[in-house]
Amino acid sequence: MPKYKVIFESEEEIYGVVPRAGDWVHYSSILKVKDGGKKPVSLQMKFVPPHPFICNMPETHSIKAESITEAYTKVVKFLGKFGIEFRN
Image (cartoon, rainbow, N blue to C red; front, side, top):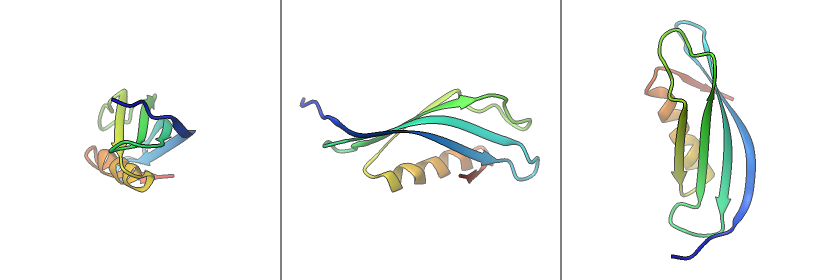
């Protein structure tokens, strides 16, 4: 299996809000883009406390995608499962 090089890497801050409660959710993330492979974009998310009143969020979450746009679409769906609206 070939090893692909990372051609782009950045730190991302992802925020969401619980509409009914007004609580904020914050994930600190590392976005990596590799030069090949089936899903060259990865986003490693780590939760930054405090947890919102309504639910406990997962401490970490990993996303693999074909493009950066698809990765952020998956972020919106992930937050939506917990009733959180994406805000950036």
